[in-house]
Length: 144
Image (cartoon, rainbow, N blue to C red; front, top):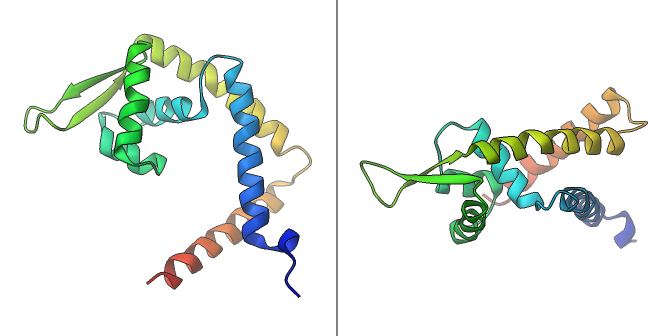
């Protein structure tokens, strides 16, 4: 018999939401949102990433990323540079302030990761990630 509390989709969605909400609260103590930190992380770690590439990495629509970047640019965290070949294409770089914030938030992320994984063995974590990846492949295969 079907039980929603045992449904893997329900359990993983609830877990993902709870994890995201908890990280959001920790980041809010530093006046930054989870989406802003994720954007800073990807911009720092992907040299000259475009707005479209950032949207793809964050699984967001491009207009949402444009609004996010507008605010981050206002805060002085990022700069957009137009492509010489296509003025519609914008490359993203961090300002010094953006780099400082991204680096400081890595400590928050490491502490969060440590707290979340407390008592979980590396082997159990590997099994969890492997199983979840297999489920995602099954979803992709089922949508073809």
